[in-house]
Image (cartoon, rainbow, N blue to C red):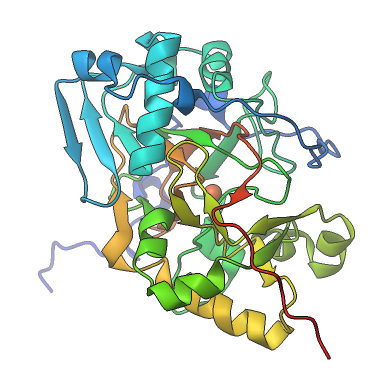
Length: 357
Ligand SMILES: [Fe+2]
């Protein structure tokens, strides 16, 4: 080694790079001790703004300087459309396009800087907002904001899940209530300095279409039990407490998308835990196949975040996973707001079930 080379271990503490302050300190996650909003939500008749939209999407197409599909099956990246400037009709078009394409990536947005009131107002266009029971929210706001944050002191999904050979966590958010999340808005405040920290999305519509007609025929008749005692929640509070406080719902395994009317494979690896009526081993076997299936590169895409990026995705069309591959200690600061849409309905009429003898 040349004499004038200083290795990391030789550097004095004063020479160690100091962490930079967060760019959006007002959006750091906070939560008063002991405050947990109820996660139970009684069934309600939801609006689906995508159904009101003009199918030719005039507001989006007029404003856009480019609209490019990420893959033919999932994801569209848009330039020139400023979400904060869209009329209610334009926001309806966003819901329709998100339902069709799974995930929309809006670049160069002012959304991060329009303030919490307007951020809430915009997402409320899509439905009543989910109040997260545990995630932190910006001081002075409420649990409708879900702050996703990692830095040199706050760990990532890797820390939550513990030692593993590889890390992803495919899921749909918060599907344990009769109404489920719909047109969700997720934006970046600060990304890792050395890259990584993408978000991956999988088309549950194309995952369904890829299956053989004979296999689809089996799935069409099944229901799946969803529970708030999810993989993440059990890791966070322990199995006993997670089960005691659980909120549960049963949804069809193949749902009709309320806007596109297409059948969707509505699996949720963290929350959709058991096939109704199956023995636990049968359920585990089938779900293991389906959970592997939705991770295929055949119907997934990755979204690379950049300053000003806002993602809008339809949780009934697409599952998602964080990609926690960024450097340990690097700051990643994101915010999400989730509206509720309608109750999932079975995509096909049910066959009579054979009774035991
Ligand atoms: Fe999520």
